[in-house]
Image 1 (tube, helix red, strand yellow):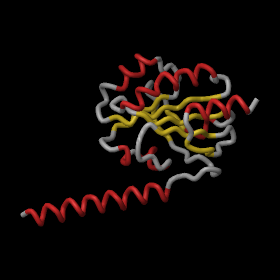
Image 2 (spheres, rainbow, N blue to C red; image 1 turned 60 degrees about the vertical axis):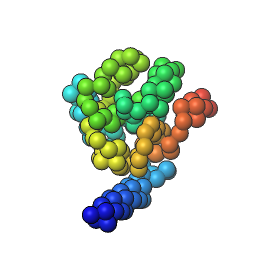
Image 3 (tube, rainbow, N blue to C red; image 1 turned 120 degrees about the vertical axis):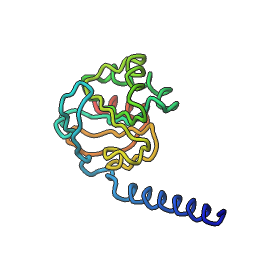
Length: 166
């Protein structure tokens, strides 16, 4: 019995490793066009990422259950407020429970229009997250006005990029 459990555990770890590697290898690369996707915003409006070309886009993957995401929330709001003329924020909440994300967005003041909630038990199972190679959150991707994926940056780095573009 113990040997069987070990094989099952080993098989699960191996399967996870293959899926993780596949996700990373098939994800978007910096310098290429950002992978397009369609989703529904929290207000029910259809959304397509490629429709946002013309401004910088910050694609932020987070979860209301994620302590590092919550710690970064004030920085995200501050960045949005500081650069709202040059930057469109798109948040993708990867939620295990659909009842908690709204409390967080209200608490921290997520006032931007482009908010998406994607329910998944595991970050890797989100179709949107897989396109960007997201395996943990928070993850932030900066997209240039022409739709080019610039990279996964910290809020400080994004602030510096936006300050220097002027």
